[in-house]
Amino acid sequence: MTDNAPAPAMLAKAETLIEALPYLQRYAGATFVVKYGGHAMGDPELQRDFAEDVVLLKAIGINPIVVHGGGPQIGAMLKRLGVESQFVGGLRVTDAETARIAEMVLAGSINKEIVGWIGQAGGRAVGISGKDANLVTARKIEGRDPDKLQGIERHVDLGFVGEPVAVDPALLNSLAAQGFIPVVAPIALGADGHTYNINADTMAGAIAAACGASRFFLLTDVAGVLDKSGELMTDLDPAGIAALRDDGTISGGMIPKVETCVAAVEAGVDAAVILDGRIPHAMLLEIFTRRGAGTLVHA
Ligand SMILES: Nc1ncnc2c1ncn2[C@@H]1O[C@H](COP(=O)(O)OP(=O)(O)O)[C@@H](O)[C@H]1O
Ligand SMILES: CC(=O)N[C@@H](CCC(=O)OP(=O)(O)O)C(=O)O
Image (cartoon, rainbow, N blue to C red; front, side, top):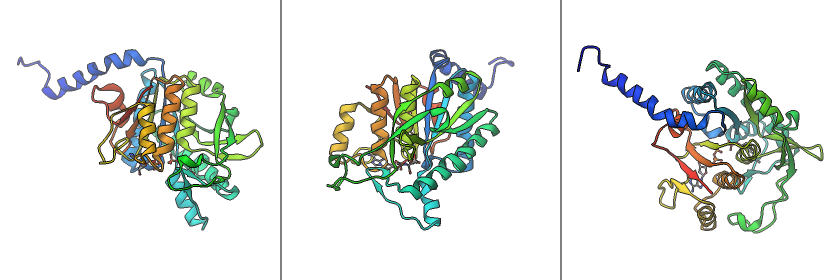
């Protein structure tokens, strides 16, 4: 080694950047939708890592759109207020009061917290919900299909739980074009004028499809989809997912996650990845290195 040769650690940094080059070239100008789950919003360090990842994507010419959840945070607020809450097939049964509280927690506090983290990391985030500029129009989910519910044989009225029926991405497109990072809360208005609580995974998938996103990431608190013995399944297609649902391997909060991944890839999103948000910089590692983590869902 000559005197002016770089130290091995410096060389490793250069190699990491070079490893990222093909991905940088491939994704310039693309839209990535990132679903940030309530369970993934762990400690302040992870929040900072997440915000830095999003800001870095924007800085290198990718358009990130963040759609966030907040299930545990809604649960904590409902508990404080003495309101009971129940989940059916991964969805929260939502009466009028619960819908008001969900909107307050999601579109009020969590949305602005995330906007703040991104701001701190040097990005310019704009917090909105599905109501803004008619981004998402919701329709009441008429109960869950009984055969899709574990052990529940009757029709269950979920109350003000909605699913997106129309997405108008105009606001997202203008924000992205002007250098802003949209941060979206999963609340939307129905054509009937009611406010609907939408599962954040479902909301994110509908937005990914409507924006022609190339990648769709769901950050959660597990390594990805696990098989019966708890091993990570790195690769799944719609048929594999249907089988895992039928035999009960996939349950609870993982149901809307895999459903939305399938819908997104069937609508043209190249790939949807369920990622472990507890790993620092999980998203960057997934995008820019050959060592992809999590579960990749493809058509
Ligand atoms: N096969 C499976 N693999 C991984 N997680 C599963 C599976 N089936 C059910 N789950 C549950 O799904 C949860 C993730 O969904 P959820 O709690 O809604 O997360 P988030 O708040 O990130 O949306 C996991 O923590 C786990 O309890
Ligand atoms: C209808 C329904 O279940 N809505 C969810 C919305 C938040 C959410 O999905 O948050 P996570 O992504 O953190 O789970 C709820 O009320 O909990």
